[in-house]
Length: 220
Image 1 (cartoon, rainbow, N blue to C red):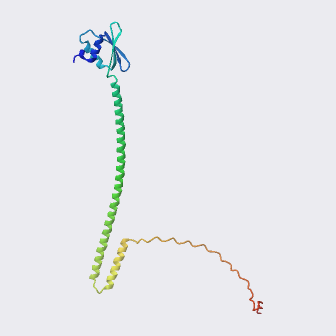
Image 2: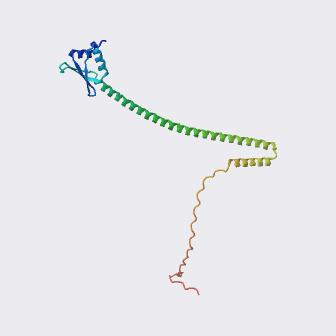
Image 3: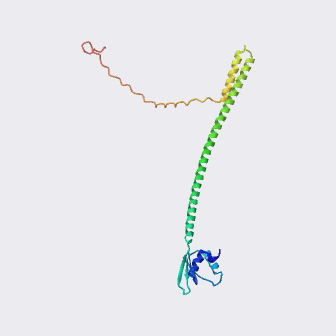
């Protein structure tokens, strides 16, 4: 599209200015002279497109103000900056919330895994104890069967030898199993300290009375 057909250039050309004063969004002003060349409108459009201008004042040949052209897009940059700031704020907020959620999830996972490891260790300990108990029972059963077979081979008449062998086998098993746990005994009561001997108090002899209440005479 040709520059002279641009809406901005059309508004400026309507005032037929000799020069322009371009006011920037930051408050600064810049005078712009209009060249007498044929491509002056193309140059003016390129200049205005490269500047953050807010308002253009058209100055006539007598240095008077003949017209003003406002930039309709001048406030869009501020709005875009505000929107960008809002997006940054919400993005930072979402990032912080996500970070806290990930941290809390990791803490819960570590706690659950620690409890699972402890439970697994306990189950494995119980299984090992059952295996050891079963193995010990099988050994005792095998040894009992071997002792019974050995006693039977000694003869049915030798009952005393068989009984002695079974007693010896039982003593061996008791020695392998270790001492039998006994229930805790109650503490022995403390012996009271010895008391000094008490002196016996002899009661005075009371003469017995007779039939009439008269005391009997002492026998010489």
